[in-house]
Image 1 (cartoon, one colour):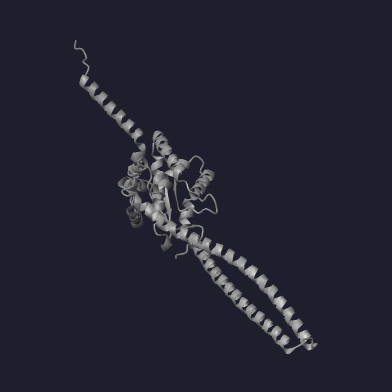
Image 2 (image 1 turned 135 degrees about the horizontal axis):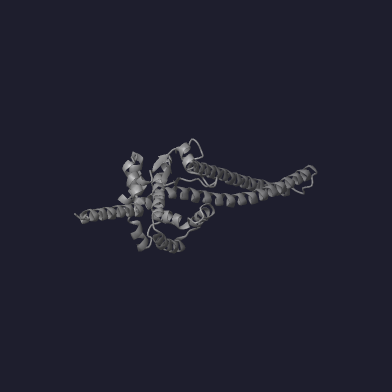
Length: 331
């Protein structure tokens, strides 16, 4: 009677197949984010605007990859307001990374050239942070905290307070995007880290400095004019008070002179002419004072008109980055 033989070849093939399937499953589990990203990148069709943004921001292939994996899109106000929710009414937002998507507000002001590029790079770095391991977040986060302690400006502190109020627990995430796009000359370790996302990070920092300088110059000019207005206003107030007092005193002196002249109180023509000449001199001096005061008032009015123009221009720029103001003005 024949005995049934076991097929070791079949068993071995089955084991190999099982190992392959196990390895494939493990690979899929461990790399599910990359696979998801790659799938999105394959199906993503960037607009010409996004391509230009990527180039001008100096993004590397990896930076462009994360932008594509996040389906980055530039949107006008109506759609942008649906996709990005503002947290505080007085704090407009220019972009957001939400539900693994990047949305960028279409800023049309030519004076703020570069603002969309910086926004896109900022949001791309949020996508990059989202993909870091816990250990990497700790390592990079420590470097970011140390850098922040050295370079924190009052403006940056105010921004971080905003994030602390509205995005609890995302402090390092925000620093990761802010420092990476707005501050040059970081520590060598951070520069080395950011180099994986940028071919030339100086490009995006320069764009940030370019449009930020527009706001800075307007603020500086407005502050200077404001202080000059306060100072000149005080001088005009004091000078007006002195002029009014001198005018009242001169008016009283003229009335007294006329009264005495009518009453024949002057003992001689010399006395009459002398006092009359003194009053005429006071009148001329007061007229000169009035001319000077009017010149100061005219200067104040001109200065105030310039200050108002700066205020209007600043408001227009602020409106141009505020997606709730429709239509967004183009300067």
